[in-house]
Picture (spheres, rainbow over the protein chains, first blue to last red):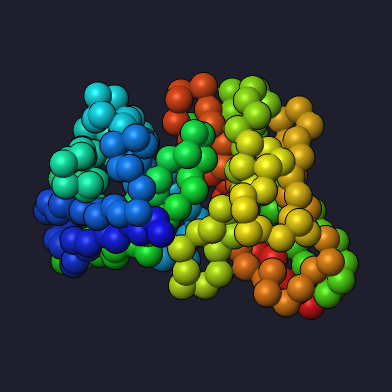
Length: 117
Length: 110
């Protein structure tokens, strides 16, 4: 059974930093690209970032480019999102999602990031 | 990349059919057969319902179907059931090699 478990969400002050993690199991992690997708309270889904199976290619939404860094450790079956210079508008539930070739076939339950003073 | 356009809400009675549209551009919906649809119940993670425009994953009811014409994709749910009440999001691959979501549609089963 595929499982994606996010962690690391907390309350952080504007301008602060945070690292999210996603532990994957139930599939061959290093065969697949992975994504981060976020959802602000009461709002829709917003794609955040994508990393290729080997970490060699990364992509970001314009809203986080230059502030967020996606990475992965295939030896630990883990995905990460380093978030710097956090803003109030980054407040959201952050999901990791498995890529199945231009769509997301499995999602975690999300970890909540709140940016507030 | 601008979000795809979905109606904010749709509604239907049990047993009826409804269709949710998802409009993009030739750089996303119209340019690729890579449209997917997700169902999200309150407090839950999104669930894949349709991929590659019209394919259903194993375990998804055949009451759910997808199609595309030009820059607009559609999700049709036939034989509406109370459990179908949820938010629905479309997504498309784009010319930037990244995905984009629609704004979401709230389905109410009357």
